[in-house]
Image (cartoon, rainbow, N blue to C red; front, side, top):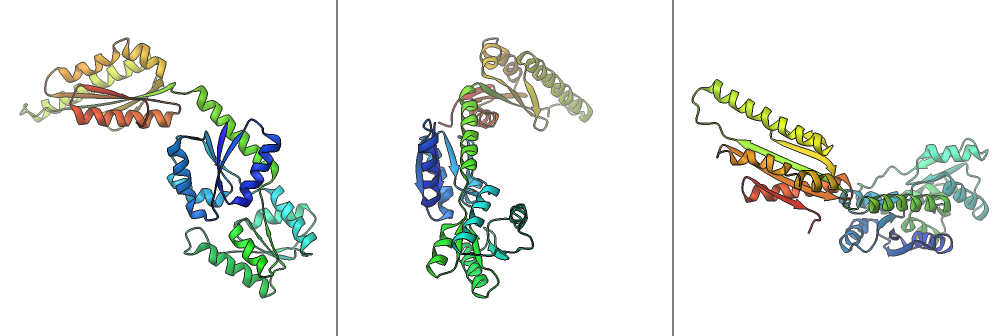
Length: 336
């Protein structure tokens, strides 16, 4: 399996060393950047190239920058904050910087988690100063740097804790005690195993899931009697709906209605091929659109490795059919 790593070089190298030593069946493709804002562009490039089977972000921060633009084409995850990682950082703070841990400053870690780790080690009453900034703050990293620097120089803390290289390195150069929290070995292994399981599941289901999107429309403007016209519409709706559910039963499919004129049937590719297409069930639906100009029917079929892929492609196929003409159907197997 090939995994793309997104994050700063220092953390990526920790992941690389562990994988080389203990996970020989995993290949890594490292694309490192010290700027978290670039994570989204790097992730999109990975997904466009189809070079890797999964993506691993080195931490919650760079993942947060990218998550809004991630697509479901390949599995992805990130290395979460972990108690073992915090314990290692606290040990470093006491041995290297001789901190008494009575007061510390942090940025991307919740005080509750730090307190739990400290008390588990028999250290009580630590005052934790958390930076009051989030990713939406303008010049986020500069604010964090100023925060830690001021906390230490004003004598409020004895050491600073961060997961960000851009914060740790400048502080150390200025003589401010700062410990960078790295992901623990157990966390890296756990997330890689998680990606392997998701990848194997996707491979097993490769192209085996399917969604059928159905849309119908009708025009009943000839009848002057409003009651009769509405009754005809209702009768047609019920007749079409009954046909859809009857076909769904033969496909062993779940049915989802989207308004009064659209259905999604969720099933397998095998059922679509052998029952819906070879069994001519699709023609029984399209025949509704051949009765007269009053009736219009379109079909879109999408297949994929996940239900989200299959539904997305079914929608693409349906849009193509609608743009063509009534009584048409399309099938989409990939975005191309």
